[in-house]
Amino acid sequence: MPSLASSSGPLHGILAASFNQDQSCLAVATTLGFKIYSCDTGTVCYEDRLGAVRIVEMLFCTSLLCVVGNGEGEGGLSPRRLKVLNTSSHTCIADLTFISSILVG
View (cartoon, rainbow, N blue to C red):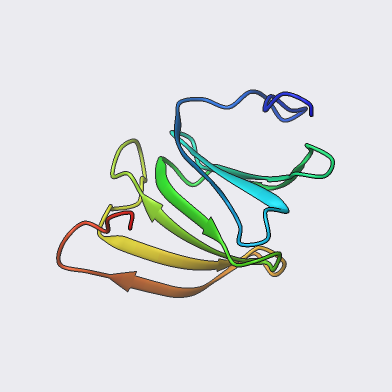
């Protein structure tokens, strides 16, 4: 499998990594945003530089992602904010704010 550095550059400050339910993709949260890798080819399927992300989870092999910020950096998402993103349409389909930080279960 190729390294996690890609043609779009290396990963900076990995904060979390998780496989989707069928282990076909790896989601990596970094201090700059997140990247989704195909486990079959090791290539980047999708990436977004929306600021420090501490949780990124992918729903099976769909275009739906849940993202929680780390609260650091310019324009960084709050750790109390959960965004549901559709990567095929490049839209946020839900933006939820909670009274306390979102924790990994």
